[in-house]
Length: 140
Image (cartoon, rainbow, N blue to C red; front, side):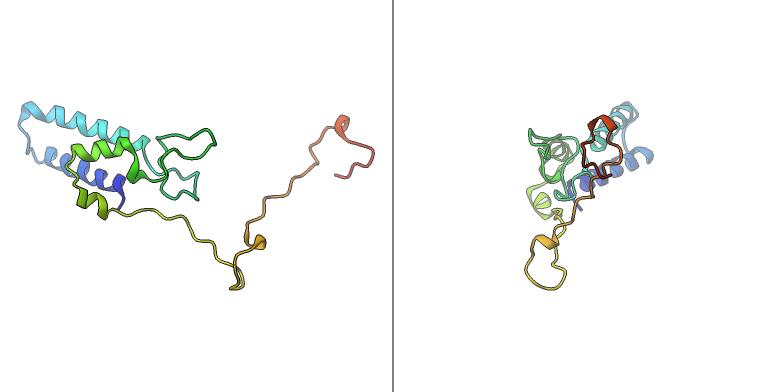
């Protein structure tokens, strides 16, 4: 379980308590709104599937100038850490949370990794090039 899942579990628990009328009527609406706000933050700050090399990158924290994730793990997301603090996370719980690991590349034949083990980029097709840009030795 990562930090996002831990907070989700805490919000689920609080919402269950609301349903069981565990809060005084004067506080129920405020607690419900707080859970809704937490869910909105959780929806923005989640694992970004666009970066498999950064298996746990936070989508809501954006990208740096190089187009890479600002936060490589949702466990380090400042927004989620603040939410977790409000839900009573301890250093021990935080230390015990899972860290996402990028997939390990494996050589195809048991050797060391080499250039042949890097996935090839798809070939570039030139069939869409306008005639005005084609040279005298043009081959589609």
